[in-house]
Length: 230
Image 1 (cartoon, rainbow, N blue to C red):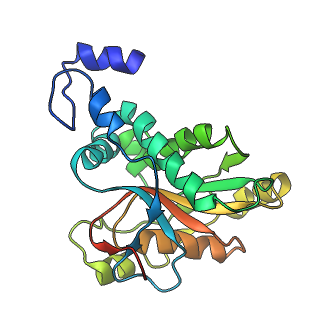
Image 2: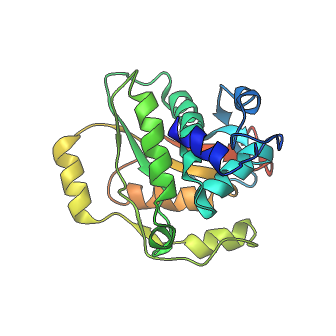
């Protein structure tokens, strides 16, 4: 209710249809996807676990993601978190419901979170966890830390892969605390968008290097530059 009142006060317009009012009007929100599917990037990075997505990265969803991550429109986390929850649910469907799910957000570049004042992907993972928690145990663990990489904008698939290669790691103290609290869990890497899959694959590599093997990648949206099969 507070977010909606703030939207009206600021004279917001819907990012989907440009009508005055909320940042996403009820009609456009109702039109968002309620199911997720595997969205392989093309080409697919070698060894990438299945990447699941709910939406295509265009239109209203693209505006929501950009607004949330780059423009301080933090109220979008609720809608995007709901979409990510749908993706996580699809990614772990059929797995033992008694085993907890561990959501690991893809990290921001060093300093990016401080500049924004907000860890965008972690916030989405926490919002998604709140919904997934209604049906099974889920934990958000920002285990992966970025050592730093250049901005990915404008890079092709090979350039993105080279840019992020060996840029992430898992700090030992965090792993120790996780091991004490959760001896068994399904690990799911979370992000807002998958484009070439390079960033998700690097996060997966960092986790596998310390003995944690993700079962899936879960994102809100995938770019159209992808195929539904390998």
